[in-house]
Length: 109
Image (cartoon, rainbow, N blue to C red; front, side, top):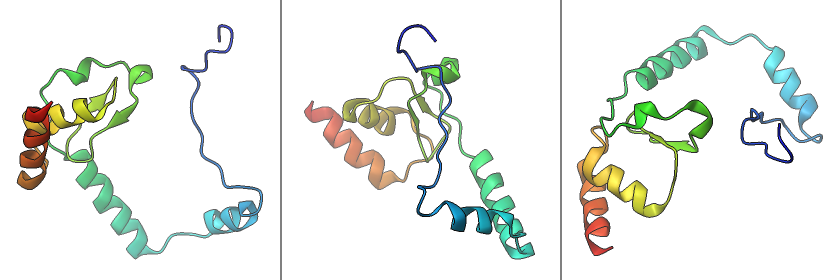
C-alpha cells in the first residue's frame, strides 16, 4: 500500500460486536439438506447469467466497483447514466420493462 490508498485491499464484512456471538453460533450450525440444495440452485442460477458483450470482461478485478444482477456485467465506473446505458444497450438479461425505462432516461440525457 502506497500512502493511504486502500483501493487494492480486500473488503470483509463482519457483524457488529453486539451480534458477533449470534453470528458465530449460526455459522457453526450445519446447514439442512434443503438449505444446501437451495444454495446450490442459487449458485448455479448466478453462474448461468447471460453474458454482457460491452467489453467489461477486460475490467481488472481491482477496478470493479459494482456489477449487474441480470447479467455478468461489471462496472469499473458507476453513475446512473452509465447504468442506464448498460440496461438500454447491453444487458441481455434485464426485463424488457427495465430496458425500456432505461432507454427513456438515457435518451433524455
